[in-house]
Amino acid sequence: MSTPILQVDGLSKTFVTRRTLLGRPRETVQAVRDVSLVVEAGTTLAVVGESGSGKSTLGRCITALERADAGRVQLAGFDVPGLHGRDEMLRFRRCVQTIFQDPYSSLNPRRRVGDAIMDGMAIHRLHTPRERQDRMVALLQRVGLSPDHARRYPHQFSGGQRQRIAIARALALEPAFIVADEAVSALDVSIKAQVLDLMADLQAEHGLTYLFISHDLGVVRHFADRVAIMEAGRLVEEGQTDQIFEAPAQAYTQRLIAAVPRPDPTRRRFWRNAEQVE
Image 1 (cartoon, rainbow, N blue to C red):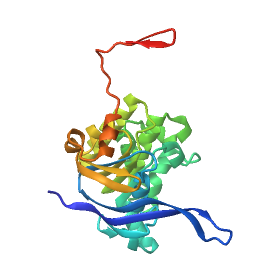
Image 2: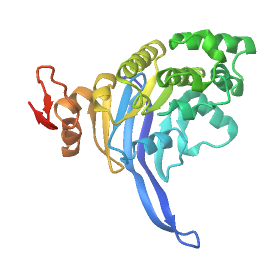
Image 3: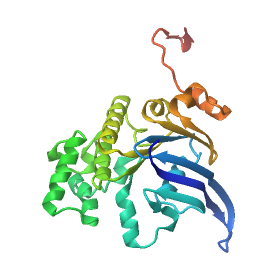
Image 4: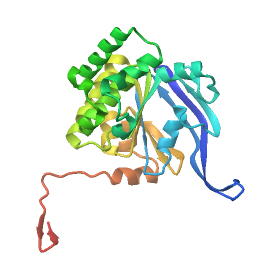
């Protein structure tokens, strides 16, 4: 068993949805409820659930993009709820990066992609300007893009290319842990497969650990080492990927798996006068 890079104990997060005229909370939503999990270094844990299950909020609390109300998070040697001060936060940000669902909105439309990749290195004072340029070019090539693409803006790329740029930007700081929040859900099937293959190759090369947030169980089955199922903010089931898919213990997990489309090439369908005939 490898060393845990992430340990979450009793994490909870509540949002106020309505307030009184005096500003007091009137209605709240408990997005994450007493979640505990462990992720071993160099592996991929997929967090799965329907929309509103709390999986993205969990990822944001783990990466300190949201402050949890209760619980303990130890990630890459950092006590996440206890992070304080610019220097400590910078060290944490170098170790932990996020790949968001929409790479277009997460990239500055006024910044050339080469500059976007180098910005993190400049903020963290990594390498000389020339070395940053060389590393940026190497990262673009590693994710299947050309060095000439460095001079272009995000709107000049396809969705799959922008996601590759987002991956290159995340790798620029040589992180140990990456949260991929629905990172391939908006991509076409063929592009999705290419990006997932790239992420798997990079994990093998650099020993990366992924927290892979997704609602697509078909993708999760082929990409993750372990699966955690969330329902209404709670962690209802966790285990090895094969175990979860072959013998799900919870009724909710069984329903999620049953809903996965299973194409059958031997089954033919015809439509006649708006009526389906099989």
